Image 1 (cartoon, helix red, strand yellow):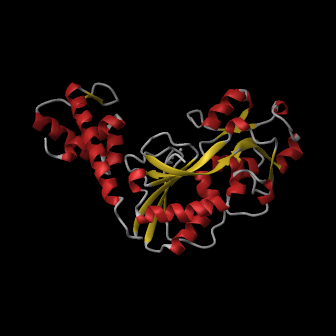
Image 2 (spheres, rainbow, N blue to C red):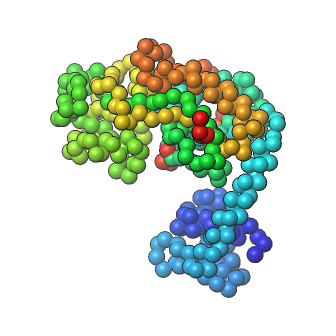
Image 3 (spheres, rainbow, N blue to C red):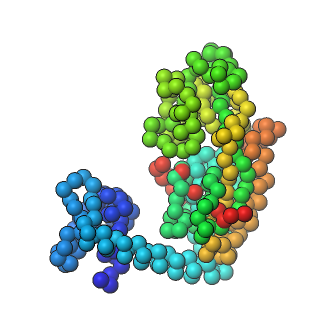
Amino acid sequence: MSDWNEFRIVLAIARAGSLAGAAKTLGHDHSTIFRWLNLLEKRRGVQLFDRTSPVYTPTDAGLQMVMVAERLEAEIMALDRSITGQDARLSGKLKITSSETLAYRILNQVLADFCDAHPGIEIELLVDNRQLDLLRREADIAIRATRPHEGELFGRKIASTPWTFYGSHAYFAKRGRPDDMNSLTGHSIIGWDSAASAAAAVWLTDSIAASAFAYRSSSLINQLMAVKAGVGLALLPCYLGDLEPDIDRIIDPLDELTRELWLITHKDLRNTARVRAFFDHVGAGLLARRPLLEGDLSHRATSTSTPRRSWCCRVRRAHGQIVDRP
């Protein structure tokens, strides 16, 4: 087999477990993937997937092809990173991934400043709460609340990010204001959807009785809006809640939920001119906002959530949450 596209199709189907998922990954429609798979199996004279259940499961032959495809993909991605890493131009595209809360509260102004300084660099911001895979070039740079463990990643710690409970002045007027975890009993709690796996979502599920949840949402921005509307109390990162004038912290930040914010890329890309420029400029912009990120209430009166002007970056929303060791 000499056609990489054949391996890409099989790998995409195996990872997604369906033709529809593979079609989304490869940017084609369901019928095209179905036709390609049938032609591939006919040409090779072998069945590559068990189709007797809703999930497409590789047969023995299919599994062999998937394993080879993964090795080929790793080699191709390594070559791509190596070539890109030698790029000395301050131009081209950078694909950045960030959580929705950081994009909403912090990044607009920082990226606007970066675009002013580097007009030749096009930013594509993937607002996604999942940790996109930097090794597979799902993104070039990630800003995420997780210390990196992969040895091939390079990054910089920006700040610690505490979390605590918030409620609105309107809610307090109607229901009273709790002042510790024990006094949350009897209050309406806003939580995540049942499928959420974020550390704060798991902690909330383990710490609060199921009967207390009055409202659930997969979006922290929507949870913030629900708090402001007086729906209930919500667990939010301090940098998201502290700048809202109509809501207040209920208790001190919870130590067990404090996370680290990191700026991350693959080590092969760290010397690319546009990646280095991003780390220098955006890293400095984020560090300048460390008091807000770390929950310093003296910065409550200063908002960074509104961009100074329109900026050149394109934003793509994605469904669903991404550092060299210091």
